[in-house]
Image 1 (cartoon, rainbow, N blue to C red):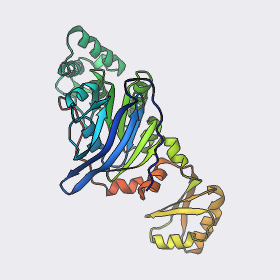
Image 2: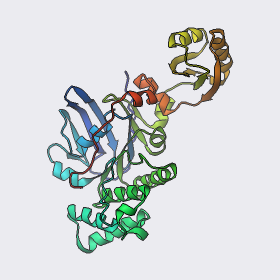
Image 3: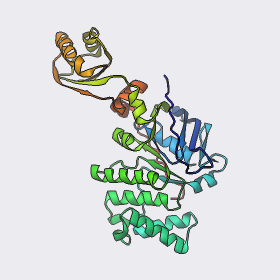
Image 4: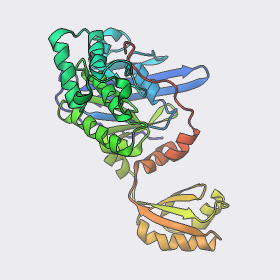
Length: 348
């Protein structure tokens, strides 16, 4: 399977190195399970890089290695130009991590959380107080700064999590599934703040996510991960642009049809390809989707299949995943074993 590499040059942030993150041939097994199988990618400084994949794809394992919390069985990794295996202490000083689960101490105030985290990173005195106040204001937590974090809403706790990851002014920030469990409005606010961190602060961000929309909106470059391998890499637009034509989505009236029946029905329809059936949902590609719809409907009807609805859409990241991984994103999510590991900084 061909892996597309279309690396975009980043800004001049961290000019000492062209890439803020470099992973080369990372391999990791847990017993008989191969979590990573030769993962390689490079992240230009000052960009948002998305690791997109379902639970169990290997995203969190990759983050654990890059943030010094786990050692690979083979391969190498550098963060901010630092070899994370040879000098993990220096690497930790250059990076911040926001894990999947809250790192907030619910029995401490928001301000106390930040000041404790700062002291763990060697900050103190007036410098630490200024930095904590700056982050409280940036993440609209100033009014709640002296309340116990346990009284915060889920969205407020998540914003405090991100602030904790930024207390020491890292060069690289790892966000492991940062918006999981947030309602749509809070998620949108978090997207805006993540974008600002890269755009205005010049921060390099590695974002892991299983939300297709999140990856499409935030990432300037993506690596799509499936079963521990990078199966495609490029900008969202480049990846979608690789798929010629349009997607045809058909909802059948019942799910009694087998994939063989559907393939046989559509075999004679000109220009229709990449036919996949999942339950009652049929997906195919065509150079001219709207023009192909009447022929598709007629062929399905002739094959004894009843159509409930049909839509035509431009290529999406789900279509990209289907092409490179050989299954839909939803299918992969239901098949994949849940990743149990959560990337968090050891001192947090």
